[in-house]
Image (tube, rainbow, N blue to C red; front, side, top):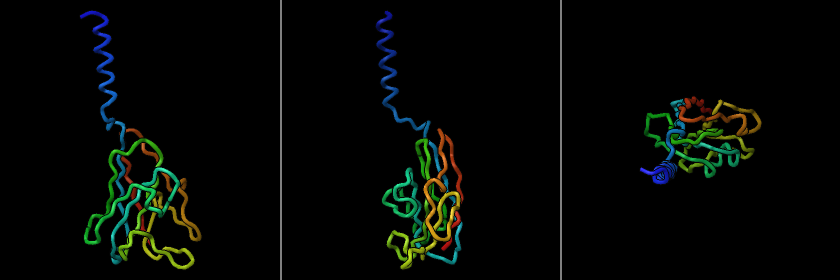
Length: 147
């Protein structure tokens, strides 16, 4: 095989490899949710990759819903790119797929965020709840939900 043929084959192989999905650098996030089992409703888990919408505008996030009949209080997000993330969870007791609040903005349904940040008079920020996902690692997170 000539040198030019070898270079062409090498370059072709590199191009083909670059077109393959790169799952080896993707991470995984496993979330265990703790809450008062006397409460019932659908469990919503939202993965945010930026502060927009955090913590309760689920339209800005990668979202999962679990039916109220389930006993599985976990959410798993696969193939997560390296970066900073925050998770918000809620127990939707009236099936409207949003966190209901009182007239003054206090949540009336159980909720929680990563790092278990909770303030008395304001919502947690993305930076307070964020954590890093690095190449090919699994993050295990426990979130405590409360009203």
